[in-house]
Amino acid sequence: MPNLLTGAAAVAEGEQTRKAGPSGYHRRMASESYRGRVAEAGRLFVRAYNGDLHAQADLREAMSTSDFPILFGDFLNRTLAAQYAARPPVWQQFAARTTVRDFRPQKIIDFLGGAGLLDDVAEYGEYPARSLSEAELEITVGKKGARLQWSWEMNINDDLGAFQRAPGQLSRGARSTEDHTVTSVLCDASGPKAWLGTPATGALTQDTLNAGLEKLNTAVDTDGNPIDVGTPVLVIPPGQQLVAQQIVHTTEVRQTSASKTTIQAGNGLLTVPQIVVNRWLSSINTTNGDTAWYLLPDPNSARPAVFAAFLRGHESPDLRVKADAGMMLGGGQIDPAEGSFERDDIQYRLRHVLGGAQGFDDAVFVSTGA
Image (cartoon, one colour):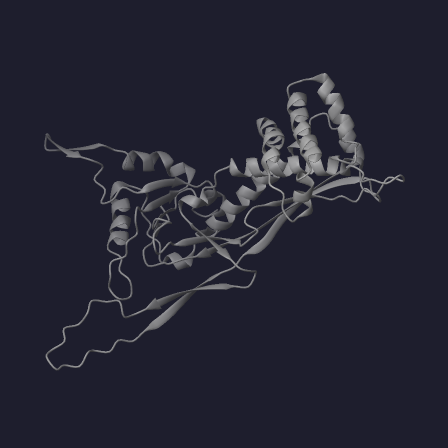
């Protein structure tokens, strides 16, 4: 419910500053009287939320006016945007964000060869020729969505405010879909994906983590050049969080042998990785999801292992209400909350276009943990 208050405040204050544009929406907002009604609607929501009985009565009356589809539509979309932004996704910590032009597969071309160390050339000697090759990665997006539907009778009986909480439920679903889609690039029900290579089997310990870090730190490209992975990312399920924190955040290691104690400063790791706790790993991977762990390059490095893709120009969820309540005999729109013309139902629909894709696999490490 606090997000409802935030959204209402956004309507009351933010809409006053919107500039007029070519769209019908902006032309409406260019009207001082309309901006005043939008601001008043926002203040009305805030007062009603704070328990003002007169405001609650006015709100019920406002919901039956022809302005409601516009005013409440603005409010719902602002609430959805605020709640969507307030739910930080986990995928941003291990995957690189990209956009695509349309629904056709998009290619990322990786040119190979020619970048190795230069050869010695003798006096009057011929310069050695090098061959070039290429590899490609494919990124696609798909349309996902959901629809909420309830009857006019249910809306009348809705003393719990489910109608007003609809944007929050849909925004939560949008964020969860992003994390599920991108995490599915790493694993499926049977375990880690094959593109990550043959997985190790060691549980997460200082020694096994060092083995993985050594693989990343010594990884080279096809020309033999070291790969800059940035700060490695350790992606783990929730059940491995305590173990990972104990290993990574250790400041002093003591080893005792033959009554002699050796103190080692630091955690003993080759590199200190960033810990990313991803609850979707154990949800998707039903085989070894509670123990499997992954080491990936920094998502901001030149060769990220995972991509999260969005459709350009449609990168945020799109929430709409079905406005088919008909027209009053005297003219004017009818509030969608009054029910559709044919079925007396109220419907909201959310669309989100996204995808997850494999990136570069030359600096990754995975273990099943058992």
